[in-house]
Length: 389
Image (cartoon, rainbow, N blue to C red):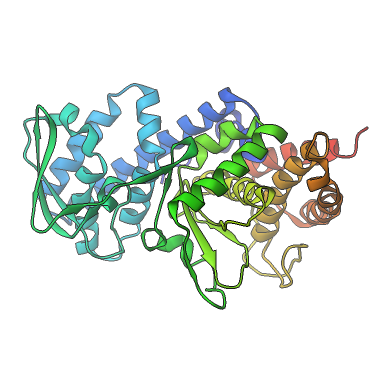
């Protein structure tokens, strides 16, 4: 993975966009372009690493796609590279545990890029493999293609045509802000982050998920409209669940950038769903930065405490908690100033104390890298503003 020098890295990175939501269109666009640049570098390194290990046909197709991508306008490259479809494909293929899985991952790339194949090479007989194994199965269009095995893709005037044994299409479901609704079976990385609650869980029906998300978005539009720009840019997919016990939780993972797991039930209050969105969006952005450049020099030893967990945590866990709840607190602070003040007043006062405890631990014990120092400075500025008249 390519890591730029620390001084240029910090100078070029819009850390305010990472630290706190709602910093404006330019900060969001710059950060997404930065993500795309590193995704392109990772793609080229992956192809180069796979070259002596997999078939020449798999390499040739991947190289054709990479060459086309590198020649496209920056905005198009950014949109493709930061999509959940592409980002998850890249992570899963990088993490493939065997040569066979790596090859299946590379051979799934034409399915991830299917809407662009005509522009890349309309005359090519694209050969793809839809893997049956979860290890490298891609999301997006490929997830909607039900089946597994070899797929031949030919580009005609009407678009791509597919030839494969037993392939069937299932409709993809999109929620407000063009956020895709994923079945939990598709996003195993998110489901593994939580112990299955007593009573288990099931996928929320699409209408219920749309209703819950719309209520949260409406609330955010009232209390923190600038945060919706970040939400549209960084959260591209949701796996919505209901639990048998009514417990509420959410999750995100650096292994599937841009997708989150969130509990949404018919009776879930909009501020709870909004909190989950704001919280997990914080993790999505911080994970994207951390994947390229560490923010801390602290080791992995779990010897610190923060207010949101009862067990000892490594310093990374303290930073993740402080960062996410700082953003939740900013939502609550703004909510206290308008017609929704009754929803947020007591919660904001509690978060001022809790975030303060975590921030004090960071101040006393965190050993920040240069990039970490920049993010922390923006966090401190936001936290300090909570106590000004």
